[in-house]
Image 1 (tube, one colour):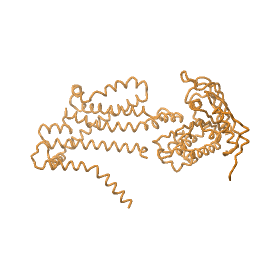
Image 2 (cartoon, helix red, strand yellow):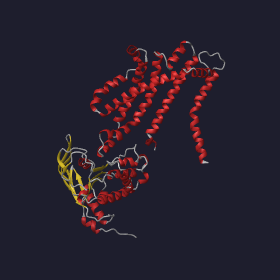
Image 3 (cartoon, chains in turn orange, brown):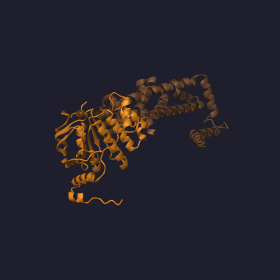
Image 4 (cartoon, helix red, strand yellow):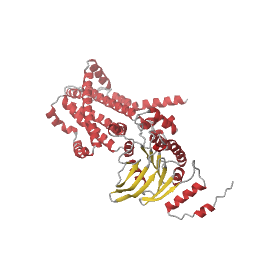
Length: 257
Length: 256
């Protein structure tokens, strides 16, 4: 398998979506390279979740089209996986059988391996009700990745987790993304999460794309002045405040120790 | 030490529910001690009657006949209720065309149908089975229907993303999701089942527990009347035990 086949190339052309009279997305054009990790941020109701649902084939566009490797999205693609804000595990199935559900050939060894990767193999016989929020989301991640998808859509999957668990999950997602080389699209409210994970950050506002920014930081990423620079730049666009680059670079922090 | 405490707690849990019934039976026994009370037989007499009837095989035969009617009616009414509940829960067209009618029929007291049923089915086996089926139908129907209507839409969408549709979607997501509600229906309908069977057997029967109670009343055999009531109570308790065992088995994940 060549490198390029591991992730979908996404091409969105003149995409619009309306619910009755209300316009949710207006004329979106976007290209995402195979294996690229893109974060979409924006205020609630800017249409970012709708865009994700359209790419997943969960909803139908009003105008325009979405192409995955030159193929038009018309129904749900088995190579596309979706992580919801809630883990959405079936409470009446054990952790392992939940993951098993996503392997078409019902391959128990594969499911166990996916659980191994998210560090939850020791919980494989548990009911989802006994897991913490972060553990549930990790099982959902194992379920999403067990079939080796070409595209992973993440609809604020870490939004409901506490800050420390969120950092752990970000590392886990980045690690698995590097290993499996799928294309990733993350919808989030959290600017530092976007800068932490994404190759590109897309800002959506008023139903359309307002900014498309490459994050040129090397990986693995750490919090430093450079990442702060990107975060501040994006925040200033989100909040409509002036971004004073000079001031940012001149005022290096003073360390006490 | 801890183990001992645990054992004590378990002992307590098993014994306490039986304390009140035992006290009631004792009160019953003492109130009949003077022998003047002809309207309430003493527990000793009832036990004696039970032994006599077990020995001549009547008790077992009547219980068996009643239980057979109950189970048959339950299976017929329950499966129709389950099937229609599924159909109306899953299909909008079926829901729109059938649900209103079923909800209307539900408000007819089953016992009000007895005269009609006697004319239609006579006083043979059919009338009891049909009435039990009719009574059981609604609680199973309503709860199956409600269970499917209140399924978590998020889980259904998750199922779609993972390519589940048709029968696999039903087996993995819809049925287990509706099961707790369906089992509530089963539990309720087991209660209704005995209630209606008693009424049907007292009205018209030539065998069964209700028949035994009715003929005993005509002959003023109070011990037999009380015995039949006790048997109904025991059968009712038995079905409740079965229902809660089903819940424990199939809803294990809820107690985790």
